[in-house]
Length: 352
Figure: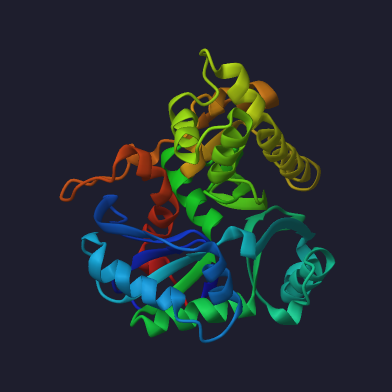
């Protein structure tokens, strides 16, 4: 959440993940999509580009995406950017009202207590999101300086002007707040190709995050190994059958259960943190599943039964209007939820 500069001009969103780059331009007043596109990346090369200076991999692919893989158009050069949530640390905590006078010092102290990286190696941003007569609630987000610096350098080298950077899960939260009653205390489970991000969204703000290196590709590998089938066949079984009732349900559930249980364990850990440290007597009311891994049939019912909480795959697409351009195929829509969130920030809200 590193705010770099501001002028009231159009923006478009740029989502950088370990497996791809997406762009999207959205009119935030009408939720009208003006342009979008994506390009797949090699995770090891992304990792290298995020951690080492002077690697042109991200720059080259941003240029390629904008020149050859864009549907519709994007305005100007100003971009709001998401970086992988796993590369960030977000927490909400409460402080006595008296601490507001020395808030920066209090935030740095909180960061040093639970982030396993020296605070001098981090960009730390924060905001007060709630106040009572006795205390304030602070949302803090921190990212390693090397990741932000390398992303900014890559974007600048592609001829673009970065104006804001935030963790991907914050962008997801923005979309869900607008489309899925995200003002309610909500658990977000964002299942990407290679990892799953978990967060609590409440009153429009991400309160706590977690995650693990299991994603939709993991599900495909699990099925391939358990049923001894090719990856292509395993993918078909995943998206067509999944956890739904059928002749192969028992084998598929058996294949997927270990990975799903690990995701559930991380979900429970994040929920426990929220309940013990943050919730102010607000009960978690729903679980929303997003991301490319949400295309697993029956996954909503699985989480509902396991957590005894209403859970469903989020469907924010009725809010996004593709009136002038071709919509992405249904199976690819989930990959655009993060970039839709960062693209829908009204330019006037980007303050220096």
